[in-house]
Length: 356
Ligand code: ASP
Image 1 (cartoon, helix red, strand yellow):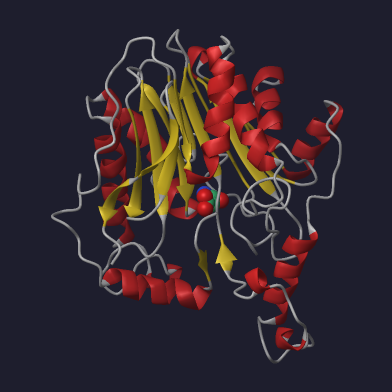
Image 2: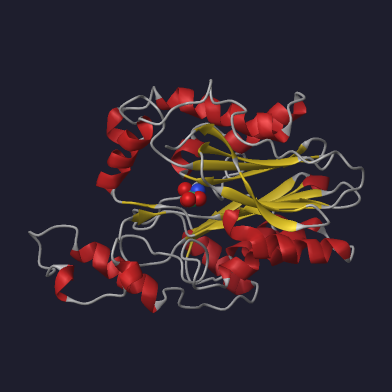
């Protein structure tokens, strides 16, 4: 799960991080993790919380399975896991205490996609997104419509709010103000890990290529915790949270969705790779262009720190047709998961700015 931020800490972090040094222009300052080009190579790349997903997806690819089925089976492990509070079952809820999920899939060989947004009570939105792609001519179903569609296809309604997530939400609600009717949270004893109840985000993205050069990807999330009901992040937006072009490569994202949506950055990453950039160069270039745009955004959005740099975390994962891959992040620290056919491991993301 990504770091937690309160609105105040969000600003504070921005200021602290703003004092960080930028190595050169930041470009290519992180570790170069690009894999050698191998024809027919199997690759699965995922966000840092996706090490079980890459393992599972590779197992399926090794048996000759379809890459979209492989990445979806991979992320289902995390969607089903109540301990990952940023995705699926156990995800942190919106400000009303309701878990709303977003997900998208894209399949390279047919250049088709499907997505659901703000869907409630369905544990595996990634599977519903695939059905939107396969069983409708639409790209995105939201909210009630998405739920009805899922139920029509035999999905079961489930309560996705775990006790731990509910307690976290309740504590957030109780600490919002000392001038409302909720008594201060301190009077109740809560588990240690629920003490700092701040804005949290997290997501899983997983992209893969099989031996035939077929590319596919999925992104699934519970989005920002305590979000305004109906808020949709970048994960179900094709071109933002995910993009696949079978002639070029695939890219996906985790991190602050609002910054990503405004720049269609996964589309940009794939486009940059199409222009000849390596996956790492393409991810860093997209991050750089977001950092530039950050300077234009109104201060009230809290997306920029005192030094005019992004105050948020944003990560991209990319894989090209040759099997080269990378993960890159705005501020150094995050890792990404990769299975290169031989080894499944976490690697350091390349970064635009160095966190002090
Ligand atoms: N991208 C997700 C969203 O904005 C959150 C995250 O990945 O941290 O909904």
